[in-house]
Length: 63
Image 1 (cartoon, rainbow, N blue to C red):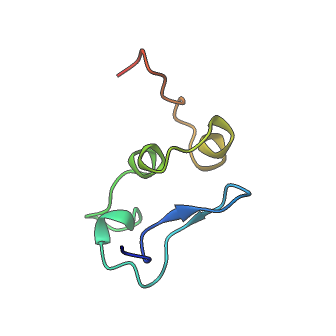
Image 2: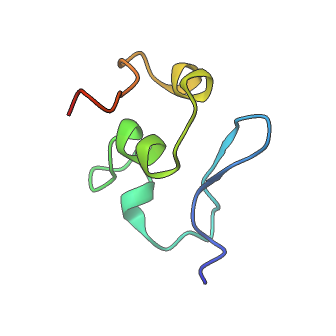
């Protein structure tokens, strides 16, 4: 298991470890994923989602 993957803390803080070798998680880089993709992958709650993006929260019926 890779302990260097991004995660959300209990208070909803997104942590992308410096040691994370997968540049796809470095949203600020050209090759990085969109913040919304990272939040979806981490199953962010609506409250956490709103903390990091102005994009609408995804719902099951909207894909």
